[in-house]
Image 1 (cartoon, rainbow, N blue to C red):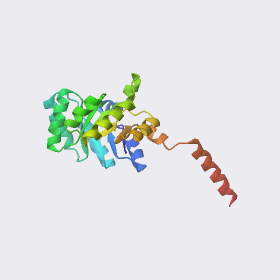
Image 2: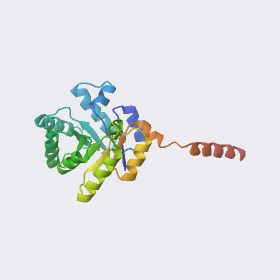
Image 3: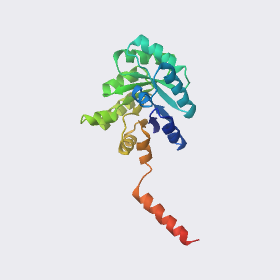
Length: 217
């Protein structure tokens, strides 16, 4: 399973990359705004900066909602770096844009997926990734992991090469459960990734090893 970090914060991206387990980055307008990045030139430069840090797929989201505008914006984003993946919303014009980019050989990530039907349409249109949102489904008392299982079954039934990118991942158990049911990628903030490092028995065992080693000096 691939690990992407969901942030626009360069320091967190560097920290995750330094762990040696980072495969890519996802961002969105909200994450950009959180870092105080605004204006087209600043946003494009920030994507370039991310590409300089991480050797992997970097999702860059279009801000447009019409087919023609998404095509123009997506082509501009794709020119930034070969690793850029154009992030497209799951709307009617978005599905058309997915097909356009697929025919052009440009990678895409269909975002805001909340149903198996939406994921199926995106895969049919040639999306590289589909991004079902776990946390937001959990917020409305819906079994988000069941959605991942449904998409996995459908994609396996018909040998779709589209990858399942579990998004809105909020804690370490989301990551583990996604791994169990076959998500291709998880994207999340840095903290859930770091929390996978922790276990009280590891901490107590290391403490005991250190104490025992001091007796040997």
